[in-house]
Length: 172
Image (cartoon, rainbow, N blue to C red; front, side, top):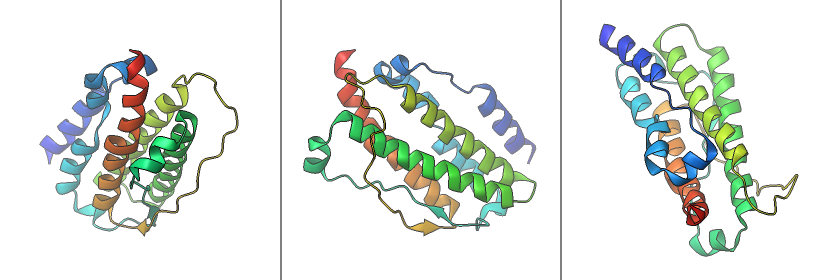
């Protein structure tokens, strides 16, 4: 148990504070910021998160390549921000209903990670910025399975977000 606590603390201490330009142009900075695998490992030793206290809407992760390519970068970013924002809100709700212990700590760390991505994606500069752009609403399936939530969060990062970054990285 002490090893788990130590790894949680060490992981937080090594938290990457990245600038948007680093996030776009440095794949290593993005890899270091992605804490999903760490959270999955910690979840394996924390029985307190077998079932979350409330549903979390899973982010929509499917990408239809032709449809995605027709979207502007503004639309892509708005879609990712909507997914991250909804996920953060649902994780926050589950966290407030959680008891103390490793389950609560895991949800706090997940919420912190999601908020870091929200912050960086909001700061990404896209030429011809459109204010108030609405994203397509994608209602994900609700789940109380933290493992599934982490899987979908990871797929959002390595899917839609990485595709957006690849497009933006052409300017690096």
